[in-house]
Length: 210
Ligand code: URA
Image 1 (tube, rainbow, N blue to C red):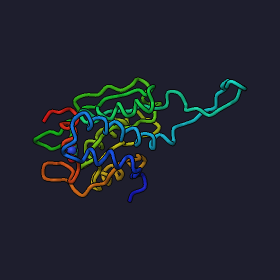
Image 2: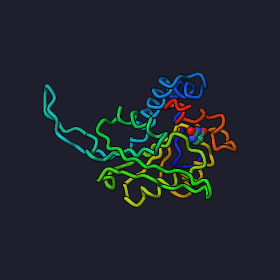
Image 3: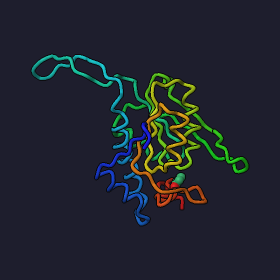
Image 4: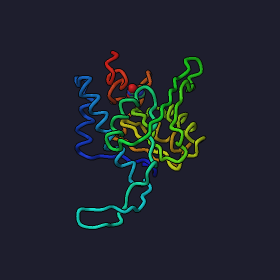
């Protein structure tokens, strides 16, 4: 496995993941599990956030204690499937600022095209969690990371639920300083671009569009 790739194998996470894989899981439970898995992955991905010391008054004494550096975290949602992950990050860090990137694949060229972007104004000072639930070819994540590189953020972590080795290799070969956090590495990508065994079209299952 590549350095920079972190497979998180907590039993509770695996229970939520098998619920996502089950084709009989309803939309409500599916959405909840996407958010809960994201909370666990984001917890792992935020271990290296900067910490500062500040004073606090307990019921018994004043003390200096470590605290997370204010204003150091942002999440960036890759539309549309990443939307369901934002809740999970907000549960962990309600103060997080959230950006959005929209990318589609051009039918003729097969290349990713960006159609939307809105970032927090101070994104260049923040550690970014890029939310892309299915890391298949990695082309979309690569495009989003390139765009984030323009802001010179101090760190970028890609949070993904199901990945395949091809996508991991593509992202880490082009962006060796990025960390990827995933709940699973599946076997392959089928002819329609879906991960197999995977969990289907995550956007459709999350939003009930099919
Ligand atoms: N996007 C999905 O929704 N599912 C996959 O398996 C791959 C990409």
